[in-house]
Amino acid sequence: MEDLYEADLHCHTNASDGLFSPRELVKLAKQKGLKVIAVTDHDTIGGWVEAERAGKEHGMEIIKGIEVNTEWHEQEVHILGYGIDNTADLSRQLHVIQEKREDRVYQILEKLKQLGKPLTEEDVLRFVKGDSVGRPHIAQAMVEQGYIKTVKEGFKEYLNIGAKAYVPRYILKPEQAIKIIREARGVAVLAHPGDQKVSREVIASWVNYGLQGLEVSHPEHSPEVEEYYIEIVGEMDLLATGGSDFHGEGIKPEISLGKWGASLQQVSKLKFLILKAKAG
Ligand code: AMP
Ligand code: FE
Ligand code: FE
Ligand code: ZN
Image 1 (cartoon, rainbow, N blue to C red):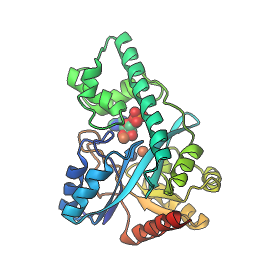
Image 2: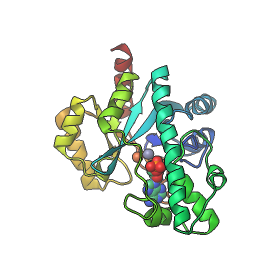
Image 3: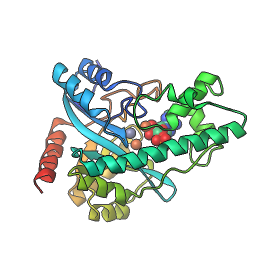
């Protein structure tokens, strides 16, 4: 039996770029003996309803979340939002972001065409099950066309920042994502800070904007990096969370659900902060 956490607070479904439906994700979590999962799709809450329904059936606690993609100094910064309310204002903002994602996909397809790697919209849409399209869907279509062997190779050659078919995203700043989450009465947590080597000072400035926690356990973090962010959590009295950033092994082969995550005690703290956000 693998040594797994009881809670995985960072999971993607096919509402964005995950391979599993929310129901399949819940079933897998159950099989692995997890107690709690958070559904945190990129820029969409489209997976919530099915996840909650499946959670009830399988006795799995579901935390409703989101991961909002932003840009900071030409790097990706992702902000996790937990327990947010599905307000009209939130839907409006997410709708704008989702439309920008679609525009970006078309621009990337244009570049790929010029590079002699044409894909039709249909080629890509075959992999899209929800309302948030992204580069992983393009990478999967490229694998299917035989242009590349793996999704990873697609990112390296074509889709990463600076690669041949890269198109910048619709630029939302981390502060704006924090604001969107807090205004929807959710808890804002910085996802995988080690990925961008976010410093103490920058974290402190985002805490001033309303950031409440750091994701410390994450596949991109070495034990030293995890330790560094745990220290900052202690110093700034923040919440520590963790998750596998699960997308399904077809997207990221080495990542398995529950291998990174949080304790039930950390989940209790998160839930307390969510309740406080509702009351505040
Ligand atoms: P997008 O949302 O379109 O900007 O695409 C970003 C997403 O692509 C991330 O959330 C990851 O899930 C995925 N991704 C980024 N780099 C890689 C990679 N090297 N291999 C597989 N998936 C990746
Ligand atoms: Fe993703
Ligand atoms: Fe992320
Ligand atoms: Zn993620």
